[in-house]
Length: 107
Length: 127
Image (cartoon, rainbow over the protein chains, first blue to last red):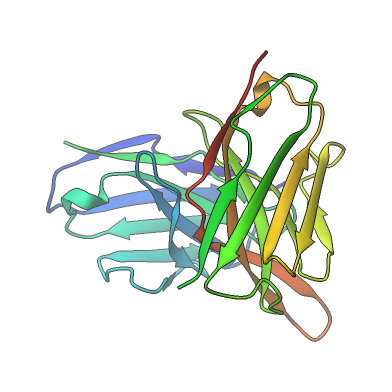
């Protein structure tokens, strides 16, 4: 099973600033990686798939990069609605696995 | 717009079987482009993939749960279901159903990302 490790566990950033979240795979997952946003009491929402392709309706301030074992989700100019928990998910190998999440909080 | 809705008991006794159904609306479950999956999230914790099903009935389970999980599909009702047997307190979680992209090459088909998700339903295991 591929282990996905996200860092940091909690990230404090001020509105308007840039946030950079990391996700590392225990072995290569190629570009078969997705990012999700989860707000309290809500289901996860797909942000990025294929490591860098934004899902339908996702603002351009969200961008994904990386391949192999190292991935980054960048949120430029944070808006109030962006403060949430973010998860990465690999789908290169079975079983599908998720990272433990990064909580993005207001500084 | 595709929507998914979980339904089932919110309280299950230890050692019994958890049963949930996901109803799909706004689209057909009988699409060759998708699998249909179950994911759970214990309170305050991360996400765990439980398993997925294709409309033909082919199933794929997380090895960590495989001995206790059964996923089935009813295309006539546009629904798929989850059964988890011999539950313990560790199975207390929000259970989500979701549509899963399916990619096929010339030789194999692969699981992809989940979108959209149902709103989730909390199942508590307690006597």
